Length: 105
Image (tube, rainbow, N blue to C red):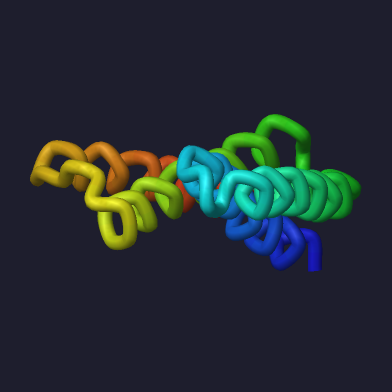
């Protein structure tokens, strides 16, 4: 169950940078800030649950890895962030590191 909590925490981690990006526009400023704070709190809560049974360093690395890779993909798909083969390779390395941490646990 702790790994499920950790995956949920990582997916929620994607929400706060998206909220902050949305807050850059005056029309969605307050909604974006509220969303960012809500996602931060929710993500932190699930990380706390996961850390009851997963070592802190492993949990943090997986959490940030999911958040970084997911935020990159959302940025490319929804916000027109630049993409290139090298950028995708970098994200693939992050994912490989997360998988390695899971397998080593």
